[in-house]
Each structure stands twice: as C-alpha cells, then as structure tokens.
Image 1: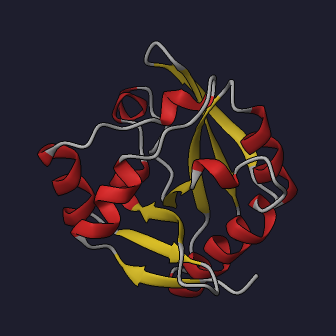
Image 2 (image 1 turned 90 degrees about the vertical axis):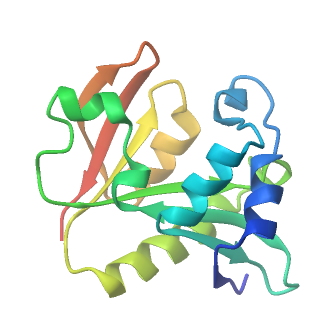
Length: 155
C-alpha cells in the first residue's frame, strides 16, 4: 500500500471529524464544530492518502497528540516527539494498521531524531499490541477518568 501525506485543510478536517467508530472505539468519535476544526488546522495535523487518493487517516505531533491531564501527572516530562494517529473507521481491524503506522513512524523519525511517544486508551488493546510490535513500551498510566498509558520508543 503506497501512502502519501498532504497538509491538513478544512475539507479533510470536516471529513475526519464526521468519522464514526463502533463501540468501544466510539470513544474516538469527534464532533464537527468550529472549535474542533480550528484545533486541527492550527496544530501539526497531517492527512494520509492511499494510492487511489482516498483519505484514509491522519496523524498529529507535539502537544496536539497529548492528553492534557497527563501533563499534571508527569506523563510528558521526558523530551520526546508525541504522535497521535487516526485510521478511517471502516479500515480498522482489517490488518492495515501495520503499514499505516509504519509509514507514520518512518515519516516522523525522518523529521525528528528523538524518541517517539504516544498516548493510548488502556482499553484499546488492538492499538497497544500494534505499538508494541514497533518497539514502543508502556511508560506512565493516568486517568481522566478514562485510563490512558503513554508508550515510548527510544532511538
């Protein structure tokens, strides 16, 4: 699967914010609002397309990839590049995660020579398993009340 990245724009954001995941992944559903649109346009979010020019996902870096409550418990003290990802709902659970995540990790590592960190909901065993395959290890757990864990991949 050949993937490419495009700079996020309002059209892509609008589509992404309307994605609807099934339970228990509906936790990741968003609302199409001016505030959410602005969040994705003002921060480092990138749209990912397949070889048919279809929007299949996105990733973000920096503070946009952090869960705000984690800062208060020291989850983001170590200097790392934080990444967040989203795959189009109808593509999840089909074995595409490895190629999708590999593309993101490679892209981010080419730009930043730092350890990578992500934050994932503890119930999302599918994602945690994928991240562990890429060498990410669990670091700090915290609740918002949703339980999260940061995972770090050293250089």
